[in-house]
Image (cartoon, rainbow, N blue to C red; front, side, top):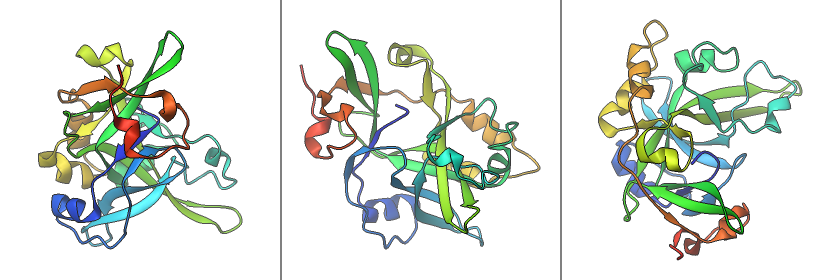
Length: 223
């Protein structure tokens, strides 16, 4: 569930879930793809929660030429984020949440790549992944906010789908994750060390193998 996801929660629903005011009209999306604008929850300059649209695909601040714009770093290994030059400053100061209702993963099966939709349960309630964000300033003066979510080794049944899974943040830990403490990252490391919650998944149609389709039929189970 590292390259495409679903977000059907309305802005008003998310405003209630996160206790913030949201004015953006972000429509339901059933096939969010890398490099597209996506909603994240992060903290503003006064420590207030904000809902912002950012580019899904982390670009390090030092990459003035924008070479990472083409690489689309959509996920970051949590085990090395605190040390790697590309991510360590964001790890210390710039945390965010990626809200979503489901995500896709693929298995090699007869006939080609078979997508599966992963969610907390069949009703697809909202959940959040731990992310890092960065402000990028290009050599030509371009400005862009970019972000990616963190991953960790898979455990239990999830290893049937992939050897890595995103880092989930439960509602009671939202504040711990968002308030990055550059002098003490023990709370952040505790969150990335937690195993994922119980999840369910089902087989969906192969139309989602392309990033172009985007409709509710993509999340329907197929035999």
